[in-house]
Length: 87
Image (cartoon, rainbow, N blue to C red):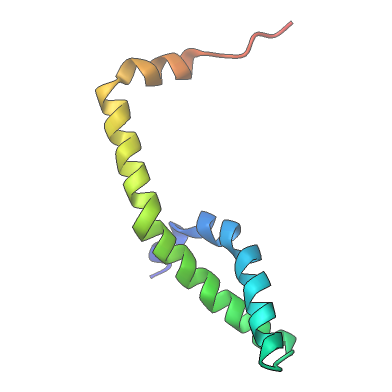
């Protein structure tokens, strides 16, 4: 189960500020200003949003990237061999 959550961790990193902002606003709007409740809501919603984002967007983008690099392997090789010039 831990392996399932380790893949979309970048999504957690990206999405947690947005979820925190909107969850805090929503909880204040309904009169629930409890920091422990906010933390719990943000954790659950952030993980859910990251898993959804990973399955809907990131998997498709990674598949496309693999397809592009397999079609044009010279692009990958030239990018790997390119190094910034040093003075």
